Length: 356
Image (cartoon, rainbow, N blue to C red; front, side, top):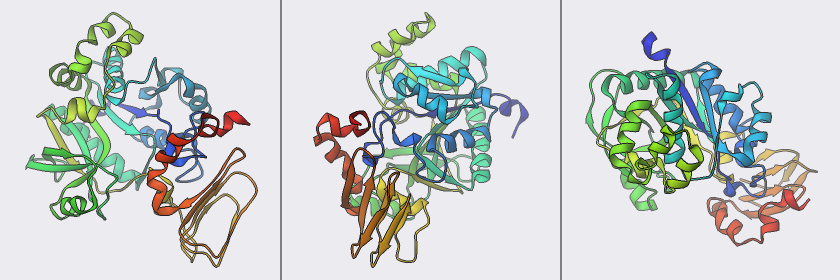
């Protein structure tokens, strides 16, 4: 990587959100990014570790709301206080990343930002770091907003897709303009996207801070009019003035200056209990257990407990989650739709930790 670009690489980690599809383990007071879902450490610690492969810790920023600031500091205590960008109110990823870009630009006029999510699994991490560095070079050289696309291994209906367009020469291999973004499809459409060579949208983004802000001014009226408030030092006013909007909608789907690079590493969005068998080791019967559990004459189950053991006998394809505050039993096929259940629960069950 060009040393000048490397010296200006910054990492932002989107660390907000509730993760309601991991209820009852994930709650507003302890959301999924604070849980050890992909391994022994909380997901946020995994994300920060990956970020530290790209930039020193003083150039890492975590974006989250005030309710999580204490928990994040406990989960990643080795970050400096400057790492925590605490959003005055939730307005979606576009205002949050705009604020992050504006903030680092005050310190570094040549800043190149890498935007990561706190709930992804990436392996091997060395290949991830190599590709992101190459993407940073591309973002700096071509003044484009770079997205990272993963090659699908199944027709997934829970992910967005990127349609590659005209190739971009040079490094990294396979870089192309983005022809279109496609939101989460139905099963038949997803199969057609895979056959056509579309890529999963990983949500990993790379851009120069000034380039991104230029595209916000040009294409995101939900945010552009509020930018003078940041210049005036009024971050709460900026967030209050912005409309809630995702960065994909506000900027990436509107800007013609967007590129995609295919990733050589394994990527997974840990989005529901049904994703654990893709990131955790299963036993001989296909059962995945986190915490004490016994599965007898049972197949394809997912169990997660931080209290006394879960025992399964003669059941298949279930999700069983047990906490001190609540127990969930459902079919694995329903796991991606768990938010529908959580929205229907009374408030005291939506966050059972508060009830204890």
